[in-house]
Image (cartoon, rainbow, N blue to C red; front, side, top):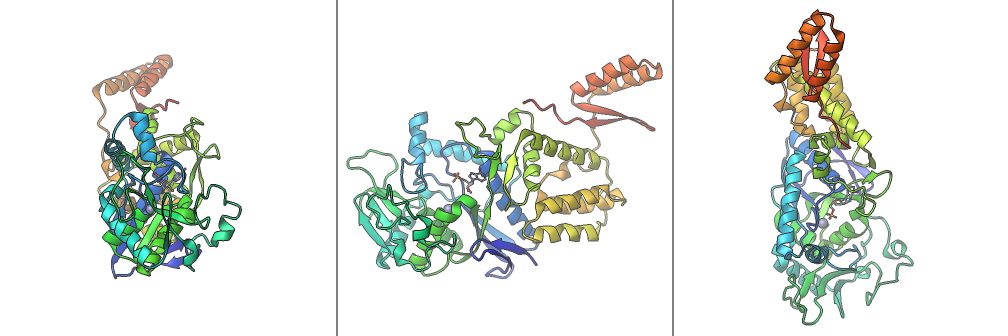
Length: 462
Ligand code: AMP
Ligand code: ZN
């Protein structure tokens, strides 16, 4: 039995899929106007842990993640410029080129963090007719009105509006009537925005209402319906999606199709830096590439994220990343000389999967992993259970398990020389040689059986 927290009902629920043995999962994907930062990647790591947990429970998961390449304005409230256009101006490229560069960069990060790829990555710009069709349904059902700059959703017409965030429109946006333009109601939102007259902008399309482009929210309602059918099982995103983006997605699907878009709504908390927001202007925004440049293995970041529950804020510091890096290195070194997987330890496996099935309690699952590593059991048994656990943790432990170190010749020579120095009680030389071995990325430990060579975590450059 899997229990998951549903933002919609504000409680943990036993998960029951709509179709036996199958799960339909939609995750709001990146806006491809810039590199995804490690905070964004936390949201995608969360969705990956969810997906892998469902899979080890025997479900066949169909996962769809949209690529937002039009319509997401610099403010989530239908104001400002399209983020893609800002990027075009910044980089002197076409919108299509920008989208390609940052989609590729995103997928590279997905692979580096060992996030399983979604089954489909539909792009907003490739689903304009579907979005137009949905707006037409909303129009037919009486949920839209026209202003001089677009077609808007009238939130006052939908009784259930506000059910996700638990606030009615008036409460939510009390006093926020400034900057409303011609909107009738503060929570109303754009479905279609008109291009200014004679605009030559690249991203504009014909529609029954005039030339323009879709609002940000309609792509997810239209594409989730196309690829998963509605209602589907689970919809995920970051907590910042709750109040506006997901509330509006729900409203659109409800208004157009008369059904709830998804049964279960799950949201991951933010990654903060220095307890605050990550931002380029503060110089504290990091990408996966930045971490690699500083000498970290991207999987150390995955380990760090696993160490916090997805519904808790996680404060990023390099000290915390160092600790995750060291723990992962220690784990890899410990399992390097383990025996071939044999019959596993059922008790610890059960405890591990029970933690995950309890609303994805990854910190507890990691603690069980270490309990296994330190248990007084044959290493073959531990290896078997470890690999099962790693199907969800995704730390690529199989690549090191039982892989005795292939020590380079120059390192081995230094270690041999050090042994000679030790034999001669030349401690000064012995210490120098230890430092030389470390500089090559290895550690030497003196055991009763002789020197034991281990891989050293790369020196972290800050
Ligand atoms: P975007 O590319 O802006 O559409 O965001 C992609 C995902 O990252 C969304 O699920 C956001 O909720 C999430 N997100 C944005 N900032 C952060 C952050 N600092 N920590 C965690 N998730 C974030
Ligand atoms: Zn979305």
